[in-house]
Image (cartoon, rainbow, N blue to C red; front, side):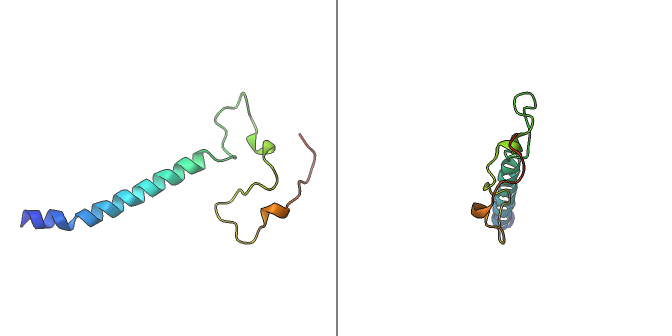
Length: 75
């Protein structure tokens, strides 16, 4: 009886680990984004070096980033 209850928990542990793994990968992706500054001495504003066609959002439904033009001065 104890063995049967452990077998029934295997799918639950699998999906919990799958969810935790996906959340961890998403947090790593967020930490490596262009809006995050880890080294303020060498590159205090990394977002100014990005091309205006860079897709900032994870999913861009309405915005076509290929047709965007840079507005404002070059720093």
